[in-house]
Length: 138
Figure 1 (cartoon, helix red, strand yellow):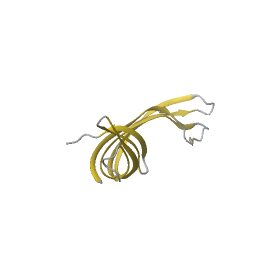
Figure 2 (cartoon, one colour; figure 1 turned 90 degrees about the horizontal axis):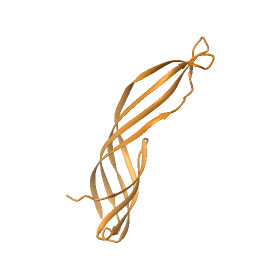
Figure 3 (cartoon, rainbow, N blue to C red; figure 1 turned 90 degrees about the vertical axis):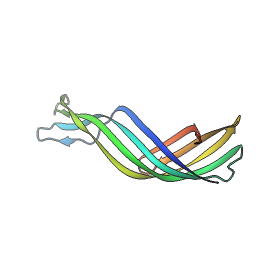
Figure 4 (cartoon, rainbow, N blue to C red; figure 1 turned 135 degrees about the vertical axis):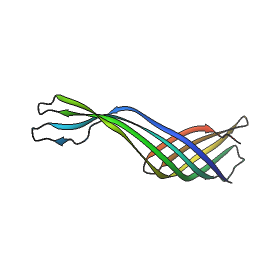
């Protein structure tokens, strides 16, 4: 059986500390990234193929396209040559949008007449997710 679905999803990463190779200044100080967070909203269309659509257990594969909108915010600091943080700065938030391919596989299980789906999917070049859900029929 072949199915088609529309999806709307979001991904949010809490504030995280990280460091990257720093830029060195003539006085021996450096600029180092400090903290950051990101949010992604995706809207897409996917198709799925399953060999046993009415079975109690049915594997399936999924593929499609999603439009992503990304917002990233962070801050950084200047570290003086002696290692102390001399100044903090808030970098402006930035975002972007692009189209990504979706690929994945899942398993549909019928429990007491209710369809449950376990799915692993990847937005190519961006995010990977494992989800548990059910189908809403319109």
